[in-house]
Length: 598
Figure (cartoon, rainbow, N blue to C red):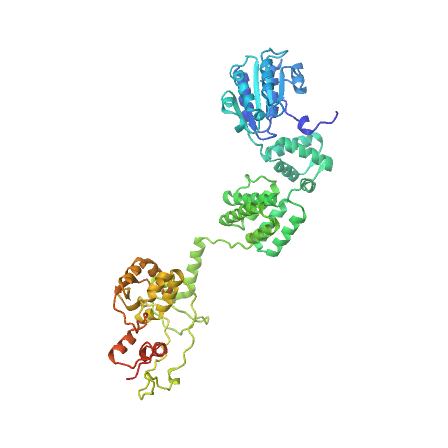
């Protein structure tokens, strides 16, 4: 056959031509020079990295009649026979099809015979991990004490499947994946010799697609020559290999910069209509973001595996992103790739994930925040200095109300519930009708509250620490009991059957009808303290005490004014309590400052 594929036509014939495995070839050449040749070798590594090629070169080097600096001359009859695969002294065995114990027994019989023409008899067993356990056991004795003229070379892509008893009897060489740059250099040299014009970016696409296997890259090169002839362009490579164009990844980062959600949906539509594998697209996007991260971190483009024009684009793109933002983008892409793997609707997942990337908020560094705070202080001027006292109208020059807050309790700071303005209260003079307590009008005027004066804007002195009053605690009592019931209905019921006595010295003194109520509240002190703080913003101690509670009074009665009124003057009963204790009367007293008339 006149035509030979590139992988066979350009297979290395000497150690120097093996691409990317100098650590292996140098060791073997030194062993030949010093006459320290082992009786068994294991070559392990990914496909297409040169394992079988190196094994053949080694077999020729130790059998060549006129070697040149440990390399075979490839001109003697012995070298030609080995290259053609018809030598009687170099036997290549496929481990996948000769994996049984019978084949190994035949091998053991043949190793006893001396070489026909060469110095050594070489057995090259490819994919040796496919041998059965019995076959490995049959090989052990021969491998441990082989004849002096025999050399075993085992090649495998899955070295972990080989028994340790075999590994311990061999010298192991690990073949690494070949880099993108080394593959591109090899293809560039081949295309030059073959008279093929190929674009630099097309070389990089082929080298990346090969994934570290030089043989795969050479096979793709043959495929492209069949499609394009001697003019290979990157657009043709992308079309034949169905690889996502790198421009799409730069479009993604452009969409993220512009926060263009509509463009993101359109981009997903292009990817789906183009027939691209969505997981492969996300893998390429993760690599694209990795390249961007490398340039941001190192301020260099040497570690980016792409052509020179794209390296400059990465440098320009890096100026628009922070390292922390790119790290968050990479994390989202990795999570999205895992989600799409098991999703029944991968397109919807990709659209949602891409929108998440586009809408992602940008991070702000702490020094930038501090700078903004300094600028704000300068704009506020003297009003922001606590050492000066200013007095001005309630509204500043810009028309916005300015309020300077002094010392605030920690509980108030933690209360993050929204604050709404209280509804306007009608002026006191509009309420002309006197308040009645026992059902009839009185001659005494109602004590009316005056509207509070407008507070002046003042930065100093600071307001004193606020403490919750008994009135405020009473107002919140029923609300607090209801909130506790929502979380723990049992303790909420016990709390509702008790009453608030007083608020003093940072504590809520709660009267309980029996010892069981007292012990229950004590056991749940921490919970009650936290719930009261969340509701009111004040952190107070809970002090339950045993008291004889009146049967007629509501268990939550705790208003000091109501207590004093009921104790100072006997009033007619109305329902379950005196008129002064009626909720309407209590509301009037709180809102308008009214007092009961004797």
